[in-house]
Image (cartoon, rainbow, N blue to C red; front, side):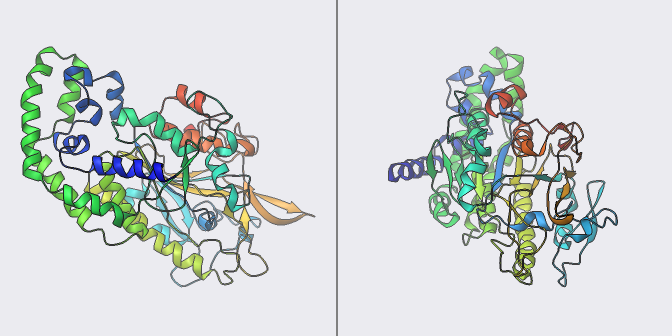
Length: 453
């Protein structure tokens, strides 16, 4: 474990030092995969895929937060007696329910969701599915989609987790320093059977800030690189290579501006809370350290005894500030079209309150928010009641019709395959080919109705 942490620390230090490939990449506008090559050899076919792949950002909380309890889709779109039995907080400012739009889709949800910017909500979806477990200790099992994630040799008998699968498939095309995920907060994840250490923002800041300000020297290095390679590529490169070079090379002014903004963004980090985690993730994306980043946004925690649901109200409201911070940072860095952001916890919470007024674990229904350029705004899947003795005692995620993303009792994605299906859909959203998705994830279907065509 110590060796693993030391290795990642060394890689981070190397990535954030002056003269490193990530810093050269920042000021030249060329990916690490090109800079690491020799002349045109660096422009491999794999490098061209960088334009198609997206970075994945995932919020993980093993507490199993009640995101599913107040998001769009858990409020009745009509006067259904069954759905109206769902318990929501009744608190000032939460105003149950609030009408707003996800793009052009009319939805109802807790008021805080409506405070997110319109341009963010225009690319935001809320996906309903099951996780089939109820214990915190099953956190890693859910991240393996209960064994459906295959390793790079296509074996099901592995401990591969979803974040690792995405990293392995996209790291080369994105030109990242690390092949594995990088965690700046939230809860522990694993890669290749080993725990991924959490590098908190303040710790990374010490590595980053001292090396991000050598702007003039980096610009000179950029100019030298461009002058040395531009004519060769223009004269001898293939059409694809020429197009690639033209697309990636930045102007002197742009390079200087990006470097200055990066230095300013890192120097503004002043803690390790989710807002600072979001800021650090964007800074790391700018120097292309990793293909996948994990952090943690709380939405109410393990709230069995939250008798008035006040923790749920307060943390859900605060969570919107963290999501908004991430969105603003992405836009300021010009990276809003280069990411897919989502949440994945071990389970959701019961939609009916327990005898103490709080919520218990619910592996029958988990709700995740997802946003990105490829995400169709709206609700995927839905709810159906669980009855005991003719009485509604809980709710579970419904089956899904893959081509529409709608809840359907006889949909072609049964309840038992909804978890791996949302995983396949996320993989498609970050740019992984359907052929690779089918080889790496067992069962389920891509929910094409959840994605923009």
